[in-house]
Image (tube, rainbow, N blue to C red):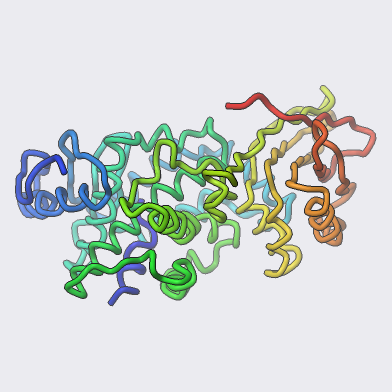
Length: 405
């Protein structure tokens, strides 16, 4: 779904069909079909991806789009999973107790819904009363997703089985690529000449004011917890920076898929770690606890969410302490008496970086509830940390590296 594309467009104030060829467009709206047919060939070319089969594009009322968003949310984040995720974030101090994560997300999505591409139905939907100037940016962004899906299979890249951090990294490649192609196209339309985004000294910093302005424009976004705000904006902001770095290293402007697909938010934040001599794939961990503790939910935080965790407890300057992250896993637990607990293990690039993190977050552990502790450990000979919240110290925890995916 396009989240930030309209704001970013305002900031800028070959095989396949030929422009205007409607063979590759299916739509019940003749005007929409004609405009999509005009845009598709150029966008596929700019995206460096081939259009292989028709794309369906339809207009829908706001009520229909909101209803569809509810349906998709039920699929992606069913109530039980949402409660477990909310409880995990609450125990970590990332959300206030009692907040309804599903309602927060639905409020944010619906207040700015303009259109989206749905990989499940391979169709693009736009709101039927969009102003002409807004429709163009929505179409451009979402058509890039439609072209991506014909080569990269977006559903498989963002499947739940890949875990939170890998999914976020893939989503960042998807949204960052679509955002850059959209800005590339719209800049040329506005300026009359191409604009090379790779020459900007700090891409994410240069477009941040436009995204920050969205917080004032969208009250539901502005009132959401930082973990929600940043998780929604990260794929557009940092994802675009990642793709810009990829383009800077390759004048062919390749799409960020296949061997170029990032595997962690660490790689999004530091593109040098995604390839070459500095390649640093994430370490997969396995965590086990005593049998009397039932695992209600488990996932990864990733460097992005670790940095948000540090910022919540230590202020913005604390983010730097997350830069040594190399892998993690947390478990939400239910005890024999119904008590709730969380255990989080992480592995770090060096003992020095592990100890810096431990000393920093260690000052905030007391605020995470009873029986909270953070200690340094070894994970298969590597520096690690173990955070317990509500889990008695006498309860054994086993941590090790998981088999490579």
